[in-house]
Length: 486
Image (cartoon, rainbow, N blue to C red; front, top):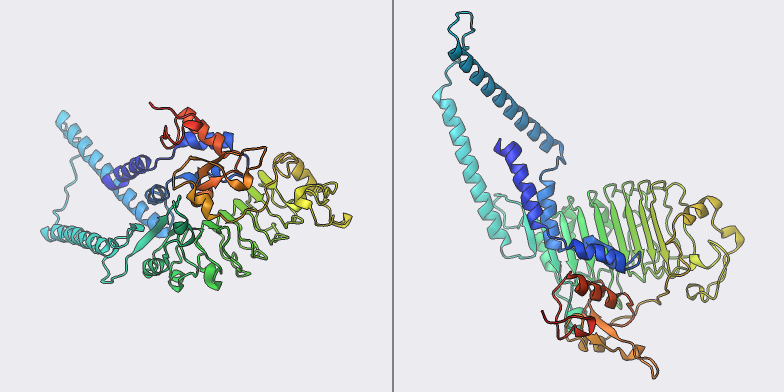
């Protein structure tokens, strides 16, 4: 009863109390920020450790393998049989005491169980308790030296390797320029925690790992991979061993080399992948074929400066969301008619919006300043154009144009001093006639710096203060945003 019913209820309650997402901010960001904005992704804004622990607790109640299905069936059948027998015995005994009729069937005599059978059960129980205690102690001793391992398996295998399940090392808001350009190198930590081959979650933000450790090949059960501002330059040829991967996110740092090469068959075995995001990979010339991504539901590509065309989208039979942001070289799109589940299509700041692919060529548009217009033979088909007409945020002519981002300068960081939401004035945006006010922010989880180009950031923080969402405001630094002393 405890394991079959009580344990899942306890785990569900524990997961609910452990996971804390500020849903007020999530709803506010949907109102303040436009489609395609990073801030609209609630998954990215949630605490990564709490999210990981919630997933592990919640997944423990799911039946994901044949072995877990068999164990649950045996436990439930055993529990059901014992409960049925108990009810039958209680019923017959109660009926036996209420009548003296000789016609009442007597209880069937049960054979005595030999004592040695009980000894076997007691011995097995004692062994299980001792083994569990030893496994917990051994795993804790192996993993205590690695605080980045936020979840690990309990195992007693006489090995020194930590059986790490989730490696999360995230700094969402570096405070100094030195921390930004010289982040902590975690290559050796990743190598050490990948030795056991148990990793299921690897999430790094503002940490250095230029080359993937070879030991990661052992982690074939990896389901969540997020590498933001890690300096990764090459995706290894053995990447496809992660055939259970469900979430894949790579974000490059402005000013770094970032990813320059991916295997052509990188996605060939990733039929479990449901979420894919690539951001700021300016030197990546082409994307791998999408063959194998039969379960992909959301794909977001942003600031891939050298990508002029996308692979065929036909393999993405379950695709529901496609966002293409600031693809400054993208000239055309593949056929979309086979993506029948596509509900959200967002395109902005791409030449295909104004080079004649969709409609009349408009070389006065900033995104088409230079490229020639496409010939009529390359125009979009009527069937694909009908899809675009149902998506109002696809190539919206009223959308603001943002030039390619530039690396963050040291002075932009120094003027903030690591203080969020401080008012600042970037000299680049100032003139004799206009004084542009900026705000110190960690845009996209980058270093805290003066941002004068994000026109939504100031309004977003003002709305947080008005509604009491997010971090408590500082009445000294944020008085200009409307923060007052309580």
